[in-house]
Length: 255
Image (cartoon, rainbow, N blue to C red; front, side):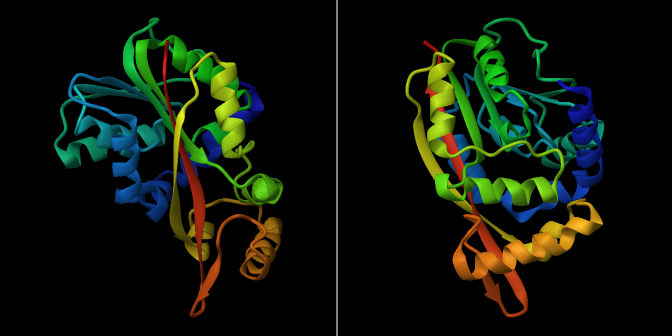
């Protein structure tokens, strides 16, 4: 990982940790159920959650799988993951602090490898995906879930996200995520989608943009109310701007 980008991620997610772990879109129960069910996870699975953050996805999988390992680069996130595990009374989890390039695991160590809301932070998502495939056993499952704006709105969406979070690199439309998986040697994935709801002031409160960028973020969301320019389906609810943003879930199986 580029050292500057690594520093950006550590800075942003150390500061964002508490807010991120409670964000409505991140803890959305319906989205978590969809992710676990669509993956086909079961009691025989050993799962790896790549860039696991505060352990929300890992803990969801731990309720249906034999064992789950979560790896993340940000210590503050892993502290929250351990706290979540304890709160839920789960015993079948292991947490690792570390980078995802390379993943510090043996070839074919896991039956299911998942990453949610992380690919848009990777400078080389294809390399991370190849690592995920390497540590997946033959006929095991690879799951990529990420923000996936419509192609004609992706550029504006990424400008907005980069302003909001300097560690953001690029969210890819579904067809690009699908092509990424095909290029890495996976069969065509099954794909489903979901819309996650948020509230603009809450989003700002748990983000750490540069102060001079906040007016532009507000302007972009105001424009999205009228023209739907960001693929965030923004609307005004009283004095509050609410929005729904796109999540794509892609599931494939290692040959």
